[in-house]
Image (cartoon, rainbow, N blue to C red; front, side, top):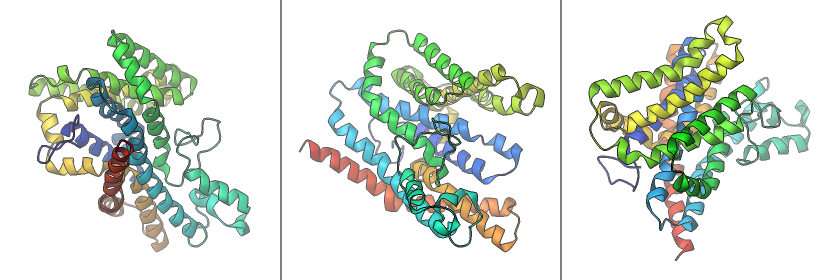
Length: 371
């Protein structure tokens, strides 16, 4: 990642890394809180959609400007970069889940599929549950249900979104070809927005999870214009407030029981939420006070470990909930804060031991192909 105080990787923007860190922390706060008002303040799905948009920017910016970009190196580097940390976090969650499911947490529905045969699972069912956790391509879901309509069985719940990260990563060359031949980007934005709206109306979630990445690709095409000059405090603040309002619209509308029943209104507000995520990414990329804030050392570090935090926080939160439950302690503000702090600390360790070495290995493996 590009950092102002350390050597930058080509095409990386410090503030966008920081925004990814803030989004990851928002997901942690969403999962740790059982208070509806707090969950609305830290909406989980908008943060995930922002991850997708950010990935669209980061993956597209160099290939769009470098005709000699090596796709031969890209594929192994990207697959290993995503696959090793995701598989490691999944393995850890499965191992912990097996222990919990067959000892202290036998009544926990999250780990029901990991119970041994005496609890109702045949060996084949148990093995299916375990193997399906490592399917990051075909086990596609929106975190609740699969494409086929069955309940999602992810033990490490946040990993559901990695299916869409892998999918977009695999089709990136096609995306870049399309981007280079599109001359009317405004029309592409209209098409992507329409696809997202249709997805929310129909309930066919793959359409929005794939197309929202294209917002990032379009933003990447115009980064030069977005970053060409310093923006005023009023401009940045106005865009930031507009983006946050759009992101919070589904929660605002959902708080009114009568309005929450209108499918067309819900589809509209959720589509605007995705547009708000794209606007937030644009605002973060603009030179201004918000970009400066996202580039500060604490936010910068949070961005550096954001992938590890996203992959592992659910395990830490689940552990804290189980511990407080066994001790008869309410999962109140203090345990929540401990869970958040513990998640960040664990993510730092996971980054040092797993993610950072996997990045280096992915680069070496990609370079070895052309050696």
